[in-house]
Length: 110
Image (cartoon, rainbow, N blue to C red; front, side, top):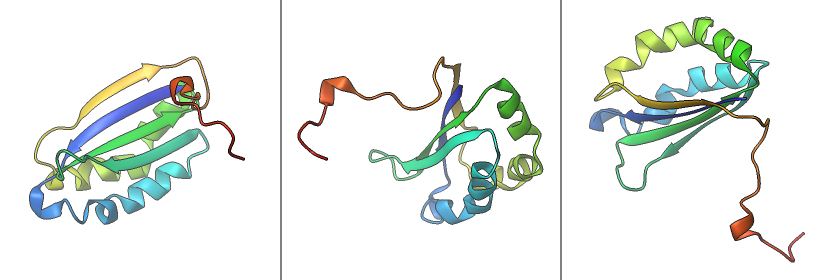
C-alpha cells in the first residue's frame, strides 16, 4: 500500500472550521475504490496543525487520487486556508491494513 502522513498548518482563523473546510474533499477521497483510509487528527501541541493519515491500495490508486477532480479542486481551495506548504511522508509499505502494536497488547477484553 501507499502510506501517507501529511501535516497541515492551518491559519488560526480557520483552524476551528478546518474539518468543515476539508469535508467534501475527505468524503470524496474516502469514496475512491483504492482508498484504504483517509483520517484527520488535530495536534495536541499546536491547535493550528492537523495531521492527515491516508493509505491507498497501490501506486495506481494513489495516482488516481492525485488525478481526481476533487484533488484538483482541493489544490485550488485549500491553500488559502494554510499558513505554510504542508509537509508529507510518503512510503510504500508491504501490507494492506494496520498491524497490532504488540508492546501495548490489550488482553482479556472481548
